[in-house]
Amino acid sequence: MSSTTTTLDSAAAVTIGQQAQTKPVAQPAQPDKGGYFGGTGRRKTAVARVRIKPGEGKFMVNGRAVEQFFSEPQHRAACYKPLEATSTRGKLDVIARVNGGGITGQADAILLGVARALKGYDPSLEPKLRSEGYLTRDPREVERKKYGQAGARRRFQFSKR
Image (cartoon, rainbow, N blue to C red):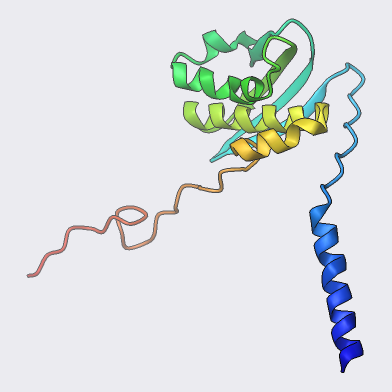
C-alpha cells in the first residue's frame, strides 16, 4: 500500500513540476512572399483579413486610411488597441480587407485580425495580447427570428378576446 502511495506522490510531484515550468514560446510564422504576416478576425457577420509587415506605421482598411474608413473615434481606437498594447504602433504597416456586418463588427473583426497577425509576427507578444483579451473571439451572434413571434424574443400583441 505504501508503494502505491509513493507512486501517487511521485506522479503528483511530476505533475506539479510540469505545471511550474513556463510554456515555451512558439516559433514565429513564416511571412508570405510579400513579407506579410496574416491574421483573420471575425465578429458577428464581419470578416477581416489583416496583413502586417515592418514599415512606417501606415494603417489601411479597404484601400483607405483607417481615419477615413472609420468616422467614430472608438472604432479607430479599437483597430489600434493590439498595436498599442504591444508597443508596435508606428513600427508596422497594416493592411486590412474587411466585409460584411456593420461598422462596430468590422472594427472588432480588425482588432482580432491584427492581434492574430501580431502573434504570428512575434509569438512572445501572445501572453500580453491574451491577457488583454485581444486573441479571444467574441462568440455572440444575432439570435434567429422564431415563427409565431414578431422577432427573436418579441411576441405578437396578446389579445384576450
